[in-house]
Length: 399
Image (spheres, one colour):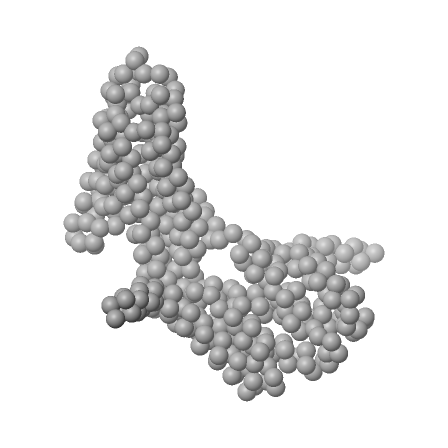
């Protein structure tokens, strides 16, 4: 009996500990079922295509589903047109299928479509095309595709119980806690005399931490997009969370550099005994500065953070002074590595204070072009064509 109850508790825990995932798959299932039902009601036998497109389009957030839905719509328009043209010219068969896929790739490249729409173009064409396909059935499948994309966009709004801003803040807090913990571990290791193996473990963790940067960027971009479209969201807060995400990105990169520096120092013989304690104190101060940045918001939290970043800068300065005073007794390469850590800590403090010019004066792309429906904006694509047309028109009238 105890074994059965224990097994039952473990099975329940698999779901209770993953509430966000359970919510998302439940919403996806309801969206697919609704797409099937609505597709069949509005279009004869349109449920299957609508459900397939809904499953392809729905993502874990409204922002991503909107992008996927737009990609499906663009892909539908282009892919279906190419497919119907190929079938009309060559009938259904080996030639029409191969030509459809090739022409879809050519058209997608010519229009600078991103990965989302580029993939959807041939997929949609193959969904629409089928043996002996009459034109009316093709139009039905086009309509089903639009229904599936629209339902995916609608249901994706309910995928999360938190707003994009809150999810961004949670993501930033989570990564900052890991970053502070890693610096604290490195500080303790340096103070006690670390080995090359320990330094390798720190560097590996720092690399893994850097892999979370694209997630933070994507989430903060979604928060900005949500603020533009929904009146309930605050644009200023969304912009600020985006800057905080970039600041944390800079911070994590500096931590990886510090981990690499400590590893290289271990390979070359280790840190000098005279500077171990000073380096450990500097790393500990940087760790505390990161953790204090996201303390509970109280009236004194900002003062606490300012004090922590000031302590980090002072600890960095003390490290620089110690390295310079011992310059004669320290290997030149080790001296350079130590000074580089001073610069890393200074940059971490600047990023946490959000006063670095690199944060606000340098434009940061929202997301890679490959993730957009259109890699190049429509206006940018039209401008060269307009210039050519205007030149030809002027030449014609001059004649």
